[in-house]
Amino acid sequence: MTYTAVIVGGGIAGSLSAIALHKAGITSVVHEAYDRSADHVGAFLTLAVNALDALRALDLDLDGVGFDTPKITLTSGSGRKLGELPYGTAVSEGAKSRTVKRADLYRALRDEAVRRGVRIEYGKRLVEAETTGGRVLARFADGGTATGDLLIGADGLRSRTREIIDPHAPGARYAGLLNTGGYARGVSTGSEPGTMHAIFGKRCFFVYTVDPYGEVWWMAQPARADEPAPGELAAITPEEWRARLIDLFRHDRGPAVDLITATGEIFTGWNTYDLPTVPRWHRDRMIVIGDAAHATSSSIGQGAAMAIEDTVVLAKCLRDGPDVDSAFTTYERARRGRVERVVEQGKRTGEWKALGPLTRGVRDLVMGLAMKRMARTGDDPSGWIYDHHLDWDAPVIGRAVGGRP
Ligand SMILES: Cc1cc2nc3c(=O)[nH]c(=O)nc-3n(C[C@H](O)[C@H](O)[C@H](O)COP(=O)(O)OP(=O)(O)OC[C@H]3O[C@@H](n4cnc5c(N)ncnc54)[C@H](O)[C@@H]3O)c2cc1C
Image (cartoon, rainbow, N blue to C red):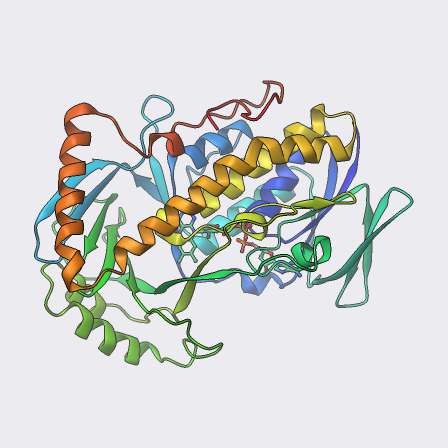
């Protein structure tokens, strides 16, 4: 079927939806709330092998962005190595995860969408949308409007589209962890570039990797049971973060304190959230995808991956379905089970990072044993996340589209 689509949000899911729809022969315009200068969001993320597999279905690779991250090591705060394994089992021979700066990723995806003929409009914040006569009308905060045969809400965790589809939709759930991080220069960690090192510290989780030029990219996730009030984290200065983090890691072995000390500007902190079950993903030719539908705790490193997979599956459903409604229904059948399972696993992983002194030792023991078993048997309990192949040409069928649910 040939449609025109209004896409709300020009992040990962929005830009890639436009690319996927274009490949399916569907015209779309992306409407992004911020202007271009909002690109410079500081942090980085790792796209696991399933994310890269989904990108390949759209004829995309990220060779010019970030660097390969083939391996992850796990260590306790006392310096005991708990294990080392491939960063996501490979869906195809030689596949490797890739770590990218968020701003570079957004820019690359938007540039690619534009190169393929997609129009992106900036400064367009969705405020309302309604369906009349089989068309969707979207209204933006600047007074502008847009119409299409369907509307895709790729507007992230605080999605306005989600509220429009269902005013009773749940909001984001605080996951008990804060985040900050930075980029350190001039510290020799002895690590080979591209290996991700996760340290389950005595008081805080820390992760770092060295880029091919010797810069060390790191993040810390201090546990905090109650959700900080709006504005509280933004008010913490980089120097206050530095002092707090050095205090949190001073009893741990590993390079955390040196890296924090050698970092120019530590990121403004932010909370971790997820969104376990949004009962209504679509209504009247409007649908939510990506974080807007199923945000995943950053602890599992799969939020962007799930958003990317969504765009491929939705475009296939629209390409193959007889109408928008049945395409949305097929899409939900294909995606809900998988994404909710990932959100649940992300929650459990996050809880492991926030344990107190009594349970920490048990965690390290269990993790060490699990790593040994995986190394011995090659059986990764998280394999179902990574071994997920999306085939652009395969028809959309049943509950699993081109891969395991
Ligand atoms: C600390 C941290 C680390 C992470 N690490 C990883 C990782 O290693 N691997 C991984 O796969 N995932 C990771 N994630 C998750 C990942 O960043 C998200 O899942 C992903 O960005 C979701 O993409 P999205 O396009 O759905 O939403 P977003 O990327 O948030 O994009 C939403 C877009 O919509 C726009 N928008 C919002 N409201 C409106 C509106 N009303 N009108 C118009 N536009 C609007 C926003 O400006 C934004 O550009 C991490 C997340 C965090 C917070």
